[in-house]
Amino acid sequence: MTEGEKTRLIAWSHEMRTVHERLREALRLTRAALDEGTDAEPATRDLLLFCHGFCTALDGHHQAEDRHLFPAIAEQYPHLRDTLRYLTQDHSMIAHLISGLNESVARAASPDELNRHLEGIAAIMESHFRYEERQLLQVLETLALEASVEEALGPL
Image (tube, rainbow, N blue to C red):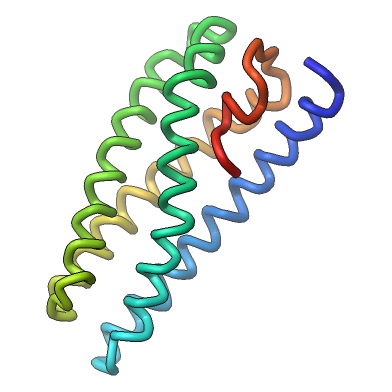
């Protein structure tokens, strides 16, 4: 692994935490708009725009993790295989939940329905983010990758 690749992996662990916090904030703002009973249209439109960009990147990141990063971690850190299996299951569940939210926003669902989607996404993503941050991000600082950083981590 080149020094640049190692630096990028370390930066990725910090970047991932920042992205996690941005998504948490987007969910908080949208839920607040719905809870206050105000017109949710701007908040849900913002969340939909955010998901079109970020969620596409998140999906690409998850696919790259599943194809390249997780197999490399499993090979070098076999004790993390159960962790990787759990995170891969989360990837599928998160994609399903986001799809449901996008469909509800597209058909202008009620604030109650949108809130249910947001509650589900918030719960699963928070659990996933915390678990990933605790169990996996430090591994990125020492992992020897055979794939390029872009292949292993997806579009950033």
